[in-house]
Length: 631
Image 1 (cartoon, one colour):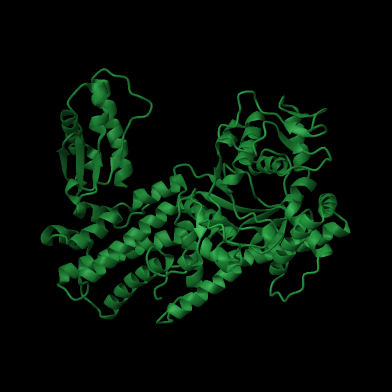
Image 2: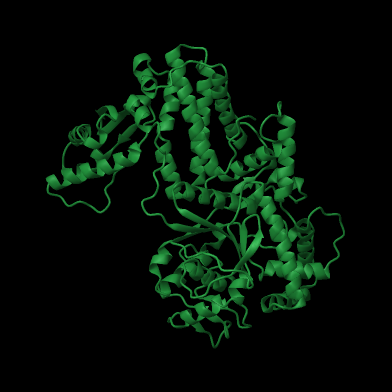
């Protein structure tokens, strides 16, 4: 954990220098630690001296020399650095003492458990139960599942929720479609049938606008419950949710609890929240104007829409004039429960595969009561998420509002070539095209996995180890995780099915290669020294090759990378690190003999391969990818 300790130490040194010069210490010191681009500048570098020039009124090289002197004699870093150098115009460059690093970190966990273990509730997936899942839904699920793995790796208690909107417009449309359309085709799954039904009823709405009144009627019956239409809606939703869970399970994605929107309404969560909101000065019923009869969450006078969002409303409707709750109203009540702020609790019954589901006739479980809540929802839902946070603040729950985090992400659209292959009119020449459930345009998760499996199967020269479907799922998952969260993923079927370059398949092959090397070494009964002290002496006695040094340095950065990834909840940074590490290891493998060399060199290189394997295994497990011994 050099980086973390180094950051703390440099902050202490900066405070000392400022106090000794009679200056106040700012709340946040400008400590920046970088990895130099060139090896000749060491493994760590800081420009802290140049940041202190304006206050200390000294030459930056003089300040850098003072920082160096205090680092050299600091007990926290005794023996950690082989040398520390000062470079113009004021950098302090640090070179790791590799023998010390190898011995000290050999049995050390790369990520120290958090000091305060918190319970995190992560909500992700939350697909409308109206048709089969598509790749846009899958990006949400892969991100959410990876965040859950990150926090578990850090030592937190994690509970994963999947919110089922069984009272919304989308389910109502599918129910209307089941009753009012005649879709004739052969379908292997109910969700694929509903995919076409949903598109067909939306086509009919455009042709017969009066049909939309049926949607309102169905919505009313769904919310009322205990009637023919409500039963039909429940059966449709439950079957679709089961198919969604089956889709996600192929990618190693599981859930702890399904929270049904109908449960929030029928168990009285909203009524209790409604009474609490009424006591504030910002929630009232409008008596005139276009919102007459609606219960509205008023915004404070200084709250505006800085981004100019077209969907922004200065006052948010929570209950419509006809008494129907908006999504935001139910979401506020749901989050009050998530944080344990309501007197009421759900009851639960098993839904299969270890998943609990809210149900009025179920049993009590210790679910909810989170210390922090993370919602994985695309960037288009930023305003409703802000409304939930504001509601918590208005009710006096500032601490909980501060622990509510919206992890937003860019939506998935289709490349021009992929859209054209699905029958979309691309004559306007755009580079990407949005998926549209209402038009039946998109790529179903099940279809994508089957297609990718066929591609993998055709490209494999050997069929040992992991099966092609598992490899396909890993490749798709990695593809959806490697982009920056805010990036709109323009999904191209051809690119997504590549197996070389920055792909999940490349990482799996690289990991399997390291396993193969180590297995071969064991099977040949090599007598290479396994004593860690002897291995640590290798770099000094012989000298590292550039390829060995590159892998060793990248491995040294793993703890700080892992800490940054967990703190920032950034799966893409983890993907980038693992791809770069795999590339360096593969270059090392092709450039350096591992088994056919002298005993000392062989021992060190086998240790390096083992350290690489263990680090990759750690990273792959966090990304939710398999770690196969063979491919």
